Image 1 (spheres, helix red, strand yellow):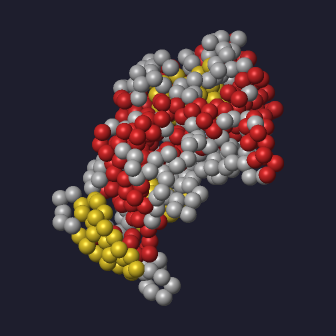
Image 2: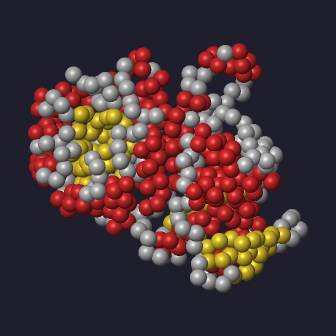
Image 3: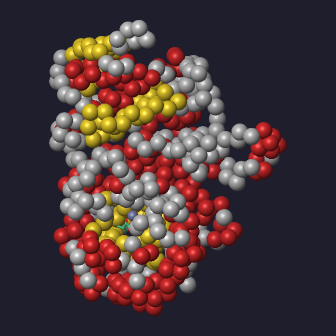
Length: 523
Ligand code: KIV
Ligand code: ZN
């Protein structure tokens, strides 16, 4: 009998990081893992250790530091992959090895060049081998929705007999529909429970048809007790099942599902914001649960209803998922104590150095802006106070001339560790371009701007502008960073320098989590 609790298995750092253009460094991965721990997920899939030295270092750092959730490392059904995962997970309190093959003929024939029997034998060997190191082993067969059910039953049954404690059912290409996926899950579950009644059945769904959450929930109805998902639904192609959506569906409709989850839903919004900032992937405004419009009521009838009684049009309250509701809380006369209290209420526990940076930025902002909303505080804390890279170079000042009748020109002064301050000027296509060119000259390297996005944090005219950039250094390393200011040129400069600092840290020998360095491409 399936238990009344669903485990939330977060794969933001593994499958989520496979989103096109996303590449997180070690500090950023750790930052997200710490937040996932605060969120209360049951399992963190921290990476694919065989992929690169940087990936191994990131998994090892998370395994050594993060306590509470199970820390999982991915491995193909190869002993070398499993050795790499076991090694990276050595510091974990509760390590899990997740080994996977493929279930469908199209994958086996064209990608793995294996017969079904060979894939089955490798799976059994991998699970047995992994069980020699860890007690917690998960097994997956990619692309179940297009696989022969009889083969799947043999494959999963053999993996469970070999010692797999969780069997995961992935719809790798997002092909299934809820009714069909539920049938597959029910079929596999019935058979594997004959081998070991305690085995946990898991679902892992992709969003190619926009059905990832619906399919995962259908799997839960069919007895799955683990859901694999990623924050903001990020991931390969159209993405993975969205963590916040599946969690809030299970909580909001507990009357139907009758199942518990361990997620602290009030941490969902903060987690979503952090992942969006560090990956550089914006959250679409109409995204369920965490989008900017998720709790906005525009139509007159709706506004009237909500003002009279919130539940007329709101099935979830913003505070249930941690969306800041207070507006204009602090101003230029507010002191350290008030800021510390407000940040604590928003869930930010900052160390002394981080708090000092946040306070300085708050004071600068308060001089320029009349009221500081919670969203402004969250933007400055997440963009800059919680630094994920040491400050190698500092922007001392910048000056820009621009207009519709002048050539945009910028002068900047940058001081880098161990060097004299460098002042440089440049012209550009626009003021931001001019600042970036001048900064490259002052730093002595040319960085390539891969992505640039600007958004207003609040709706006012004096709103804080938040800029996200993704840069590449001359060797092709990439980094994403955010800068915030009421002056969008300054926000652009801050974001640029924060990304440059990450790249300089990587160049100095810091471990690097690569964009596409898997031996056979990404999973
Ligand atoms: O989508 C998929 O099949 C995967 C597996 C590695 C579980 O990500
Ligand atoms: Zn996947």
